[in-house]
Length: 424
Ligand SMILES: Nc1nc2c(c(=O)[nH]1)N[C@H]1C(S)=C(S)[C@@H](COP(=O)(O)O)O[C@H]1N2
Ligand SMILES: [Mo]
Image (cartoon, rainbow, N blue to C red):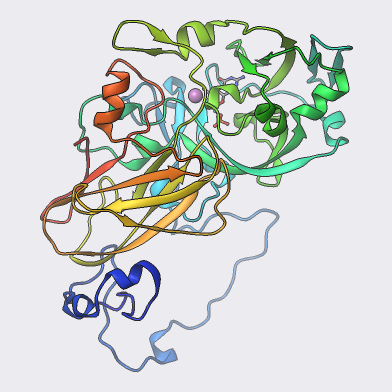
């Protein structure tokens, strides 16, 4: 039995491993370089001495032993490209813990690069179907009542590799690295709408960015969005970084990332969608009958096992399965894991807190018997939406679509313990 095998008395999912089974777990070392030491009485002689420190600095850096980076991508399949050709940069989900994405590793999608906007000159115009119009700077926003909340942003292109063919070399960073979770701070959209006296019959709002791409999206003015959307000026406690919309962006929790318009310069209230090119051609889904689906705006329930995942190696015996689940409908209520190609499912433990429209961390103890198999996760949200299999999703959407892939992700484990991307 290796030294990290959980005690048989442990509660929850650990009890799924019977004592008999635990005792029979092989003596092989745990994957990831951990050595199973013989059980001797431990003493400080086994622990290195205290170390001399470097000077205290104005900002802190990651340990030189830690390797964390996003990867740039041009189109699906064109990976690790020259930054000048990149259209996005993906979060290393397999190397992160907990649920909050560090600010410099939040995925990034920018259609025309990152403008350097000066907060002294940047302005936001709020106008349209309202009693008055207003021009605001970030100082004005900072003087208003603020809210902070945890929320994920997910590009509707997340998972786009999975519409295509199988690729053995894909990691979870490639397949799911276009979703991240932050604590965001800003002013409620309903507060701004109240300031300008928005006409209650205004059912749509145009949000326009200040970058060269001319990004502009129509946002439905539902109670949910008016109550939850914000004009954000801070991420994880610091001002927005330029890549994420400095000095201000719209944040629409739970809806496709494209609606969270960065470098926000205009909000215009109207009574119908504005049909910008971003919603008539770009962010639409081509259906099997040749028609395009427009305004598919919500991010559906989704999950993925981040460890073990694509391109990792495991050893027989105890392995911890962990991953992330999220839904644009609200909080995650359940994540189930199958380690036998979908025949049987076990409920994973969710780490607290589990917050609405934020990523939730799940985990399960697993005893791998060394036989080839497939592992997969299936999330359910508080509104009862269940993450579909790839077959069910494609049955509904066909294979022409590029956006809104939320099928269950399968990882294949072969006899050598190599974990690889699989579609079925
Ligand atoms: N002005 C502007 N806003 C934008 C974009 C953009 O290119 N320009 N990209 C959108 C897309 S497609 C996504 S997925 C999110 C990404 O936000 P992030 O880069 O902060 O992760 O921003 C959205 N807002
Ligand atoms: Mo996106």
